[in-house]
Image (cartoon, rainbow, N blue to C red; front, side):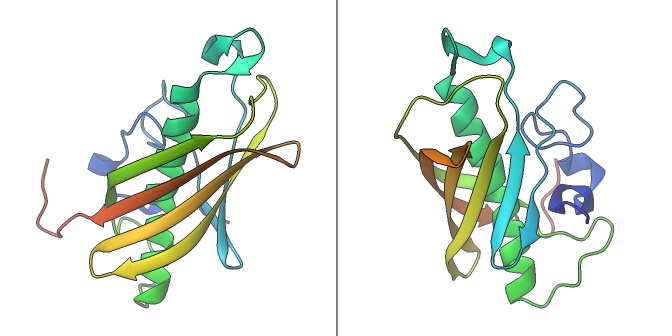
Length: 153
Protein backbone atom coordinates (compact mmCIF):
# COMPACT_ATOMS: atom_id res chain seq x y z
CA UNK A 1 0.00 0.00 0.00
CA UNK A 2 1.33 3.45 -0.93
CA UNK A 3 0.73 6.57 1.16
CA UNK A 4 -0.65 9.69 -0.53
CA UNK A 5 2.50 11.56 0.51
CA UNK A 6 4.56 9.24 -1.71
CA UNK A 7 2.67 10.64 -4.72
CA UNK A 8 3.61 14.27 -3.95
CA UNK A 9 6.18 16.03 -6.12
CA UNK A 10 9.58 16.45 -4.47
CA UNK A 11 9.11 20.22 -4.03
CA UNK A 12 5.99 19.46 -1.93
CA UNK A 13 7.64 16.71 0.11
CA UNK A 14 9.55 18.73 2.68
CA UNK A 15 6.74 19.40 5.18
CA UNK A 16 7.80 18.89 8.80
CA UNK A 17 4.69 16.80 9.47
CA UNK A 18 4.38 14.63 6.38
CA UNK A 19 7.28 15.33 4.04
CA UNK A 20 9.03 12.16 2.92
CA UNK A 21 12.14 14.24 2.20
CA UNK A 22 12.23 15.89 5.65
CA UNK A 23 14.38 13.51 7.67
CA UNK A 24 13.87 15.59 10.84
CA UNK A 25 10.07 15.63 10.56
CA UNK A 26 7.30 13.27 11.63
CA UNK A 27 7.20 11.44 8.27
CA UNK A 28 3.43 10.97 8.67
CA UNK A 29 1.90 8.64 6.07
CA UNK A 30 -1.81 8.73 5.12
CA UNK A 31 -3.57 5.69 3.68
CA UNK A 32 -7.12 5.27 2.39
CA UNK A 33 -8.77 2.20 3.89
CA UNK A 34 -12.40 1.83 2.89
CA UNK A 35 -14.05 5.22 3.33
CA UNK A 36 -11.61 6.62 5.89
CA UNK A 37 -7.97 7.55 6.04
CA UNK A 38 -5.49 6.21 8.56
CA UNK A 39 -2.14 7.52 9.80
CA UNK A 40 -0.07 6.30 12.74
CA UNK A 41 2.53 8.03 14.87
CA UNK A 42 4.28 7.25 18.15
CA UNK A 43 5.39 10.41 19.98
CA UNK A 44 8.55 10.05 22.04
CA UNK A 45 9.53 11.74 25.31
CA UNK A 46 10.81 14.82 23.45
CA UNK A 47 7.19 15.69 22.62
CA UNK A 48 6.22 16.23 26.27
CA UNK A 49 3.71 18.79 27.54
CA UNK A 50 3.82 17.55 31.12
CA UNK A 51 5.31 14.28 32.31
CA UNK A 52 3.87 11.41 30.31
CA UNK A 53 1.52 13.58 28.21
CA UNK A 54 1.91 14.58 24.54
CA UNK A 55 2.44 18.25 23.70
CA UNK A 56 -0.77 19.66 22.19
CA UNK A 57 1.08 21.40 19.36
CA UNK A 58 2.32 18.03 18.13
CA UNK A 59 -1.23 16.68 18.13
CA UNK A 60 -2.41 19.73 16.17
CA UNK A 61 0.36 19.25 13.62
CA UNK A 62 -0.57 15.58 13.17
CA UNK A 63 -4.21 16.52 12.60
CA UNK A 64 -3.09 19.26 10.20
CA UNK A 65 -0.99 16.95 8.02
CA UNK A 66 -3.38 14.02 8.20
CA UNK A 67 -6.14 16.44 7.21
CA UNK A 68 -4.38 17.74 4.09
CA UNK A 69 -3.28 14.23 3.12
CA UNK A 70 -6.84 12.99 3.60
CA UNK A 71 -8.16 15.87 1.50
CA UNK A 72 -5.81 14.84 -1.31
CA UNK A 73 -6.95 11.22 -1.19
CA UNK A 74 -10.66 12.07 -1.02
CA UNK A 75 -10.39 14.70 -3.77
CA UNK A 76 -8.51 12.30 -6.07
CA UNK A 77 -11.07 9.56 -5.46
CA UNK A 78 -14.08 11.82 -6.08
CA UNK A 79 -12.54 13.31 -9.23
CA UNK A 80 -11.38 10.01 -10.75
CA UNK A 81 -7.68 10.86 -10.49
CA UNK A 82 -5.66 7.67 -10.88
CA UNK A 83 -2.76 8.23 -8.51
CA UNK A 84 0.71 7.75 -9.88
CA UNK A 85 4.12 9.22 -9.12
CA UNK A 86 3.97 13.00 -8.57
CA UNK A 87 0.36 13.59 -9.65
CA UNK A 88 -1.42 13.76 -6.28
CA UNK A 89 -3.50 16.90 -5.77
CA UNK A 90 -1.68 19.05 -3.20
CA UNK A 91 -3.57 20.78 -0.43
CA UNK A 92 -2.67 23.34 2.22
CA UNK A 93 -4.50 24.13 5.44
CA UNK A 94 -7.04 26.94 5.28
CA UNK A 95 -8.44 26.33 8.76
CA UNK A 96 -7.56 24.00 11.61
CA UNK A 97 -9.80 23.38 14.60
CA UNK A 98 -8.62 21.07 17.40
CA UNK A 99 -10.48 19.86 20.50
CA UNK A 100 -8.47 18.13 23.21
CA UNK A 101 -10.75 15.62 24.93
CA UNK A 102 -8.39 13.62 27.18
CA UNK A 103 -4.67 13.60 27.93
CA UNK A 104 -2.77 11.71 25.22
CA UNK A 105 0.02 9.52 26.62
CA UNK A 106 3.60 9.54 25.30
CA UNK A 107 5.41 6.52 23.86
CA UNK A 108 2.21 4.87 22.65
CA UNK A 109 1.04 4.53 19.06
CA UNK A 110 -1.55 7.08 18.02
CA UNK A 111 -4.00 6.24 15.25
CA UNK A 112 -5.47 9.12 13.27
CA UNK A 113 -8.68 8.48 11.35
CA UNK A 114 -10.02 10.89 8.76
CA UNK A 115 -13.50 11.14 7.29
CA UNK A 116 -14.67 13.26 4.41
CA UNK A 117 -17.35 15.73 5.37
CA UNK A 118 -17.60 17.83 2.20
CA UNK A 119 -15.92 18.74 -1.06
CA UNK A 120 -16.89 22.15 -2.42
CA UNK A 121 -14.80 23.14 -5.42
CA UNK A 122 -11.21 23.49 -4.25
CA UNK A 123 -12.16 23.27 -0.55
CA UNK A 124 -12.27 19.95 1.27
CA UNK A 125 -13.59 19.60 4.82
CA UNK A 126 -12.21 16.63 6.74
CA UNK A 127 -12.84 15.47 10.31
CA UNK A 128 -9.98 13.80 12.15
CA UNK A 129 -10.08 11.65 15.28
CA UNK A 130 -6.97 10.71 17.26
CA UNK A 131 -7.02 7.46 19.22
CA UNK A 132 -4.58 6.04 21.74
CA UNK A 133 -5.23 2.41 22.64
CA UNK A 134 -8.74 2.75 21.15
CA UNK A 135 -9.53 5.77 23.34
CA UNK A 136 -10.52 8.97 21.54
CA UNK A 137 -8.25 11.70 22.90
CA UNK A 138 -8.39 14.50 20.31
CA UNK A 139 -10.75 15.58 17.52
CA UNK A 140 -10.12 18.02 14.76
CA UNK A 141 -11.50 19.53 11.61
CA UNK A 142 -9.45 20.72 8.68
CA UNK A 143 -10.52 22.90 5.79
CA UNK A 144 -7.96 22.07 3.13
CA UNK A 145 -7.45 24.21 0.02
CA UNK A 146 -6.33 22.78 -3.31
CA UNK A 147 -3.22 24.46 -4.65
CA UNK A 148 -3.56 25.62 -8.26
CA UNK A 149 -1.67 23.53 -10.82
CA UNK A 150 0.54 26.49 -11.72
CA UNK A 151 1.59 27.07 -8.07
CA UNK A 152 5.36 27.19 -7.77
CA UNK A 153 7.56 27.63 -4.77
